[in-house]
Every structure is written in structure tokens, then in C-alpha cells.
Length: 384
Ligand SMILES: [Zn+2]
Image 1 (cartoon, rainbow, N blue to C red):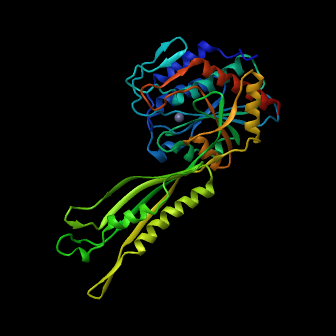
Image 2 (cartoon, helix red, strand yellow):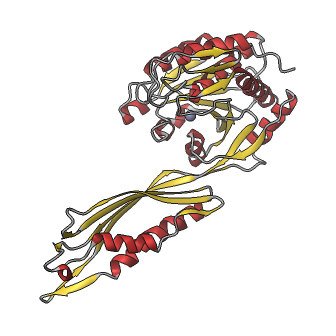
Image 3 (cartoon, rainbow, N blue to C red):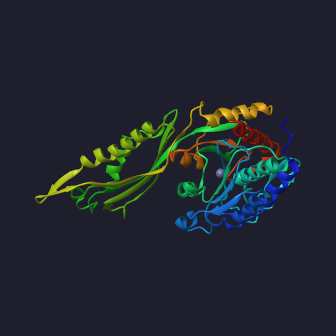
């Protein structure tokens, strides 16, 4: 039980993948290497046109492996191809089972650990002639720059409607809940005037914005909701009543209704502050004005612990004497997009640690754990 995974082969493929440069929009070499791997495992591969839509050098790579068990439901296995900056010229340092970068780049275990795990699982299926249902392997582009590959994924090429993304830290955690987010931009317009000679002829955009912000609930709103205004810019000179200020912020929540309510609250604080500032000069009325945009970044992910994919991952882990528990994460991943597009996809940890830093590392034992659970999961789907 559980000792099928070939540790050395998994490690070797991972070490090879981290040496392939794959910054966002430049994933073509990484995709080509994985296409070769998938084809050697019997999967038919194609690219979608997501790359053209985001100005990248490759689309998402979609590999479809037919099942050998009639009637078994198809399963999605997904990892992303791209890595964050600085991630080129990675020289992995191996100390026993711990793999890290040499400190000058990230390691790229986020998310090459996921890519390597998926390939090793497929190799086990082939090598041991194990029964499995249809498997759709999706390697996405541009996850790190706004989940763009997942947003543009051509779902018509994907049979599976449930599955796993491999893109988080603990192999004992199955992330089923994650916040959705809005990006917010507020531009307040006032009226310019000389600050010393005739300030009463001006409307200070900075003062209007300050009133709005002072009335606003920000920071931690509740257990599953946060909000922030992170950038502010405005004014022209210290002796001019400012006519322009812009503020850039965000709101996140794992609860879609709370997220909408928070966005509406932030907008109404600005609207109310703007409405308080009007004046009449020589018979003409001047108002402070507001321009704003509230753009959806990604939807919340909120899978039930009873969803088949969740129950089966927990059962699969149990069968290989491991423990996986459903968890909530603070950030977003491709699974947010897939769930928003009607799929049921959870995020299984691979062992990646301190991601997006020069200290990024991974323990081979964690990758093996995730691969064992996944292989067992494929067997469960074959029997479903
Ligand atoms: Zn990632």
C-alpha cells in the first residue's frame, strides 16, 4: 500500500522542470517538455488559444488520457506552468530530501511540484497497467498574473467536471474554500483654486476622499472578509486646492454576499462624501464628482465537504494511511476560476513552502504523499 510512487523518478523530473525557465507569458518551453511527457504516457495533447488572448508564447496545454474502465467518470488534474519573478536560471540545491533554490531565485516548486506529481501518477498507471477512468490533465499558463490561463481555458476540450488543482503547501490539506475578490478604483474630482488667495472657491478632492475613507470599514471586516485601500495619489502643489485624487483598493471574502455588500459599502462611502460637497459661485453650482470601477478579479471558492471530489480525496488519503482534511485558504488559485465556471475542483497541497520568496523549498516526502493520495484517488474514480 502506498509505496508505488517512484521517489527517485519524481525527484528527477521535478529537478529537471525547475531548471526550465517559465515566467508568466513565457511558458512555451515548459509546456513543450510536459507535452512530450504526456504523449509518452499515451495522452493526446493540444493547446488552446488562451496564449493569444493574454499575449503569451503558448496556450494552456490539455492532455487527454482515455480510460480503460468503461463508465468511470472523468477526472481533472491541473497545475500551472508559470513561475513568479525572479525565476529564471534556477539552480536547485538538494540536501537529502529537501530541495531549495540557491538563494538567487525562487525555486518554482510553485507549481512545478504539481506538474511533476501529475506526471508521476500517470506514469504509475501506465507502468502497472492500473485501471482508471478518463483523465484530463490541464497545465495552465499565467496563473501568477491573475489566473488568466484558467479564465481563458477552452472548457469544450475538457471532459471532466471535477478534479484537483495541485497548488498549495500542505499535502495534508485539501483547500475547498478561498476568497473571491474585487479590484476597486475611485477617482474623486473637486475644484481647483488658489489655496491662499481664495480657498473658498475650491473643493478639495483630498478632503472629500478623506471623509469617505474615514467613514469606511476597512481591514478585517469579519472572519471571512477583508478590505483595503492600498494606493492613493492626488494633488498638484501645496498651494493649490486639489481637484483630483485617486484611490486603488480591494475587497475579499469567502462569502459572495458579504463580498458584494462590502464593495457596495465602499462605493456608498464615496458617494455620500461627494454628495456633501457642492457650492455656488457667481450663480453656478459646482459638485464634487466620483468616477469609480469595481472589477471582479475572481469568484470565491466554496466546495461542500460532502462534494464527491472532497469525500473521495479524504478516502483516498485514508487508504494510503495518510490524512487529508478540508481547509480554507487566504489566496486564490485556478480552482477559484474553475468552480466559478461550474466545475467542482479542490486544491491539494504538494509540499511547496515559502513560495514567492528566495527561500522557497520543498520536501520530497510531501510530494510523494500528494502523489500517493492522487494515485489512490484515480483508482477510486475508476471504481465509481
Ligand atoms: Zn501556484
